[in-house]
Image: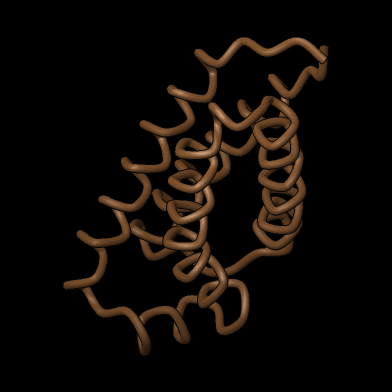
Length: 119
């Protein structure tokens, strides 16, 4: 069995905490960047597990990939341009959209946690 529990837990923690970090208007820091890079690796591991799980996981895989891309656009802007760059591209109005993207990702992660597959 391919165990991706740690990747799932880390990705959810990172997505949630990065949103809170940006929402609170905290400045960019090195640890944030490392977490951002690690989250991409966790995303890819989960994506691979869903692919190996069979065709029945395709709708969940497709939704998960789209949700990650939605969250990624916000995180990338912060990683690339810091708080100033994020705020220049995404104003206060976009914070509600970002939060909705995080909630969608959290919901999909809960669905992925429920998937039981053997390899």
